[in-house]
Image (cartoon, rainbow, N blue to C red; front, top):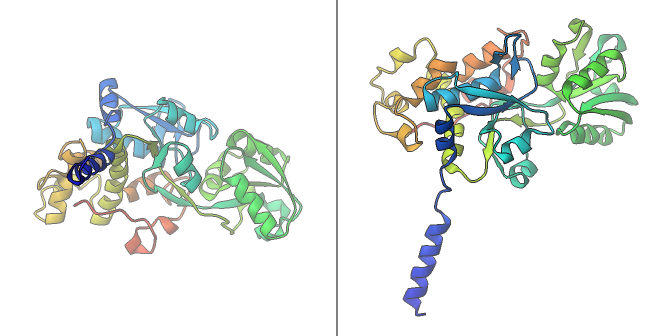
Length: 338
């Protein structure tokens, strides 16, 4: 084989290596006529059903936004409640198309489970909840405490690291799901319940006497939460990723559920690209030109979803904090639509 032939073969091999994975998930979802979305087993503010089986929450809105982008109908979603232990298997097996369930993005998960995180929908961190009667004001006062925690989460390792790092002893009492851990905490089987701070606020609402428990000020970890998809389908990865980015960008651009139709008439170049009146960015994703309009009409922008589900306008009353936009004092940031 001569030098020219060798070069040609190398070029062909390189081209083959960068070919996109077969785009099957979008077709499967369309053929089924419904998105299958993995969510929690009931976490107020993030994903929880009401007594009629209607799901709401920040994670739920991401699923509805994807359905809106694909079908122009945010109701075409089947919500599959999953435990922390079963969530990844359900995604790997194809039982669900996307997992939108308060799941922390870590290196080990990103590289060993055959999944891709598509972005961050909520910047969180692990904390501790105790009963006010214990008169504890800081996590550093928890030496010797018994701690309830959910198995199959990053919380177990963070808990061990924190207590070891501060030369404190503790007794861990682990449970298969968060509800069991909270019930044990409420009944007095443990002194402390540890989880992501957002979960602490959500689970506190389930207590018979929510005001008798307090979330301590320490945040002991970084917990970037976001939706994830299977490896191997770059088009679907892009659709889920840019659906979330569209919600974030819409807030930055001032596009809301109420004004989206009016904003779509704008002559501003940036808005014309977003709304598909200039270019074909939506079609590059495998969607329609008005994909952003569909999303915002269905769920509102990221800020609207946050406020409605977990923010000061909700029962959780969580401050935006790190989840404020990057130009408003937070770190929530999305690449531009251009």
